[in-house]
Amino acid sequence: MATPLSIEAASHEPETEEQHQYLSFRLGDETYALGILGVKEIIEYGGLTAVPMMPSFVRGVLNLRGRVVPVIDLSLRFARQPTVPSRRTCIVIVEVMVSENRQDLGVMVDAVNQVIEILPADIAPSPAFGTNIRTEFIDGMGKVDGKFVIVLNVEKVFSIEEMALIGPLHEALPSLQPAAH
Image (tube, rainbow, N blue to C red; front, side):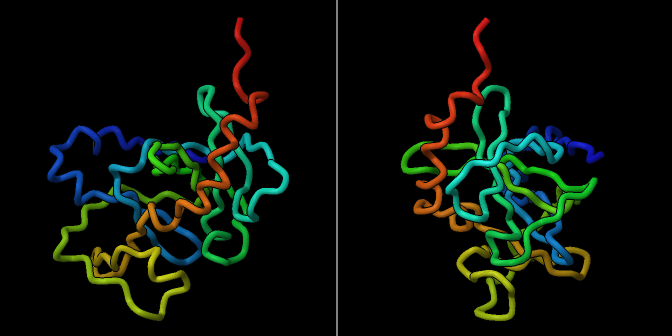
């Protein structure tokens, strides 16, 4: 059973330090990172409801404290094989912009590693070639303990066009809202 990772300690650091903190996670054999400021929480994989006629990378939606949250298989989003859920598979809840509104989105990953600090001087520009994902998805290549971590740009990975397909789910699926008592 996957254990949710607490990111609460990171969220109480001074703002200047937060800007250098990233949540690292695994997709296959590669390590990626997302800026900690956009990460709301990490939950165990499960409880998804499939939604017909959605893009293939949308694995379904989950009910997160009464809110409908679409869940994206990041491996499929990067045109790879679908993630095969294991005991370490997690859903990282991130906040993204949809039009002029913020929306929560679940990102399915193979495993969450830890919160790491990467200073701006340790982030090289994204390569023009050589990675298995589109270069506009990458903010840079962070160097941590002599290894590279791919720092993702959440706003580009989940672009406005694709988020527009996901956004209407909130109104379209009232059955996932908790019943009033």
